[in-house]
Amino acid sequence: MRKLGALLDKDARDLLKNPTMVVAVIMPVALTLFYRFSFRDALAAGESDPAMRLIVDGIFLVIALCMSVGVVGATVLVYGIAEEKEKHTLRTLMLANVSAGQVALAKGLVSLAAILVVAVACFALTGVSWQFFGGFIAFAAVGSVPIILLGLVLGLAARDQMTAGLYSMPILVISLVPLFTTFAPEAEFVAGLTPLGGVCDLLLLMIEGNLMSADALAPVAVTLAWTVAGALAFKLLYRKLAQDN
Image (cartoon, rainbow, N blue to C red; front, side, top):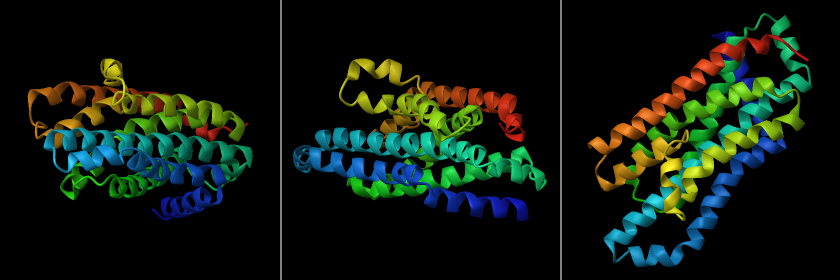
């Protein structure tokens, strides 16, 4: 536990020192604020039209969730592990008898904490009723798990921060796919199969009051499938943390 506590403190400090990771934390908040101003006319219309308000709330919650989980999750882990490889910090940790599992757990927890902090800030900017706050944060946490696992796997593959920028792009792209269904409904089926597609569908069912219906079974299955796939990939590759360049 002492080792894990020290790793958590180190990773949190590293996040605040790395400009790329700081930008990744700020960007979702800034983009959510941008969308809030872009949809101000729709928000005004929603004040008198419950149906319109439901649509707008759904759009904003999907944007907030995809931005906070996708952008932060795709950057913090991949860049964090790559930075340690590049600066040989990872080698020092291994020589100090820190296990690969401890390193991965600490980075995963710091990434999850960063995602949830950003998710809270994004939700506060959406203007959506706070009655949905608990559900939103719960879905953000659940959706973060497969993204974090994929981020750990790609972080293991990145040799330095330059390759980390390339490897983080697939996570970012597939994480943001559900966001575009708010503007292109024909992509809804494909978006529903992505790592965040399931939780976004559950989020929309929640604000419609249909979360406990049979419609929730498919999104739950998709989310579980991505979580299991990420866990299997991580289990097979995490031992590479014990190897440096």
